[in-house]
Image (cartoon, rainbow, N blue to C red; front, side):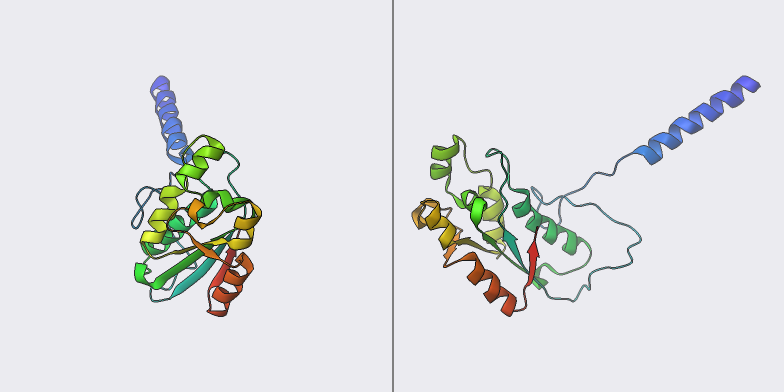
Length: 182
């Protein structure tokens, strides 16, 4: 009898440990299924207003140092869409833009130019294309582009050249876009 209780307690302990010790995994969707994994969160105290108009400009200066890896800051726009649509905000109510500058300039390069510099295709190509396809304005600082010796012909077709990152950031903020800087 004592042996049965010990076995029962061991099984209970193992099951409890497995249940509570499991790490939650993020999931993708509903807007982007290839990028932008987010965690589902229960019992929220602050939820987005499903009728709100969300406008944000992402200031992206920090690059991914491994040229074979995506820039996770660019991918965070995919997360923004997935997270907010998952919690009730209409996709049409989300208006995002991003501006690349400084050491993130390389993320805007065409595969041809990227291949010449890093011996691999630009891993950010699909990130930028899917954002542009959904209506996100993707800008590159013209000052950073020129400083790094690139021109418009060296860029991905979805990337628009701006006079400067500062110009884009101030203009969008004057149009009530919240600044998101990592």
